[in-house]
Length: 145
Image 1 (spheres, rainbow, N blue to C red):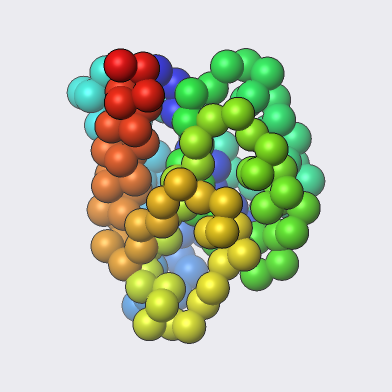
Image 2 (cartoon, rainbow, N blue to C red):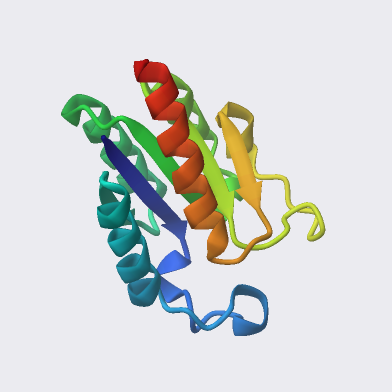
């Protein structure tokens, strides 16, 4: 089972950018935790960061060609105006789960990408990623049975 985690605009600056909102865990620290978790849970995880929507779209279409089983994504800044990304997500042959570290409802943020997601997890800090991976793993296991 292979899952792609796509980290959207501004996520490379995690741990430095507004730590009062996003915490102090850096992108590298989060990556290490998620890769260790994937290994422990026996699935393959690839993590891809991009601050450019077109690069993200190219990576997603390549993931479809490579046979990726599922997508977990924090669209971050792409959620505001990523209509091309939303169209791409709708065309993918694998399920998509969206994650956000903060409570986006409380912050009155309504990402346009959430409308094509199988599910959305938000408000649990870095734990949102682990919950998203668990949800994706369960979804993929249920699909294969």
